[in-house]
Image 1 (cartoon, rainbow, N blue to C red):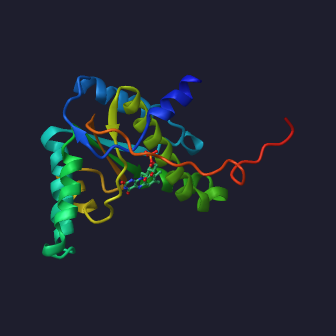
Image 2 (cartoon, rainbow, N blue to C red):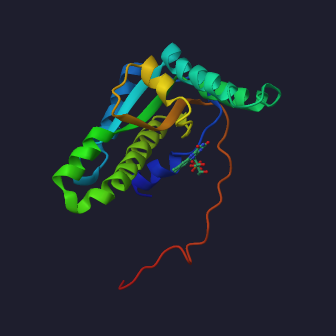
Image 3 (cartoon, rainbow, N blue to C red):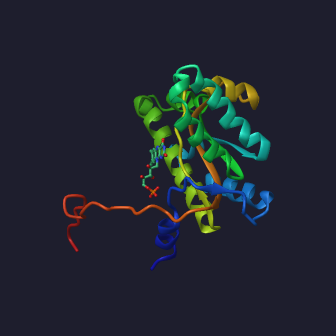
Length: 199
Ligand SMILES: Cc1cc2nc3c(=O)[nH]c(=O)nc-3n(C[C@H](O)[C@H](O)[C@H](O)COP(=O)(O)O)c2cc1C
C-alpha cells in the first residue's frame, strides 16, 4: 500500500481521548505547524491560521463552549452535551482552525475576476489544513476528531486567546491518546462515485 494511503487509512475519528501520549508537546506543535504550512491554499494565499492549545489552555476551549451552550440548552437536557464536551477535554490538546478574512479580502481586491470564488476557496484550504493535521497526528498514533462549535463561542475564544478580529473560526480538533478502538466505517460503492476514462 502507498505510504500516503496507509497514513490516510490511519486517520479516523476518535472520541475516546486520553492523556497517554508520549510524543513531547514541542514535537506535536512542530508537527501541526508543518502540516498546516505544507497544506495547499488558493493562490498560495496561506489563509489558514491555527491556535495550538495544550493542557489547561485546551480545557479552556471546552469550558467556554460549555458555558455558551448552557445559555441555550435546557439544564435538564444538558447532561449528554456536558459528557461530550468533557470527552473532548480529556485529551492532551485542541487545535483551533481559523481562516484569515483579511487575506481573503486582499485576494478579492487583487484578483477581482475570482472575487466571488475566494470565500469558497478559503473553505477548501481550511479543509486541506485540517486533513493534513489530522493525518499527521494519526501517523504519530494520536487520535483526534473534528468539531464545529461555531459561532457560539467564537467571541469568547477570540477574547480568551487574544486573537485578531480577522481570524474566523472554522473548526476545533481535540486530540489525545486513542482510548478505544475506532468505530466501523462503511464505504459507499465506487460505482456511481467515480468515473475513470481513457485507461
Ligand atoms: C467537513 C466535516 C465536518 C465534520 N464535522 C464534524 C462534527 O461537527 N462533529 C463530529 O463529531 N465529527 C465531524 N466530522 C467527522 C465525520 O463525522 C467523520 O470524519 C466521518 O464520519 C468519517 O469517519 P472517520 O473520520 O472515522 O473516517 C466532520 C468531518 C468533516 C470532513
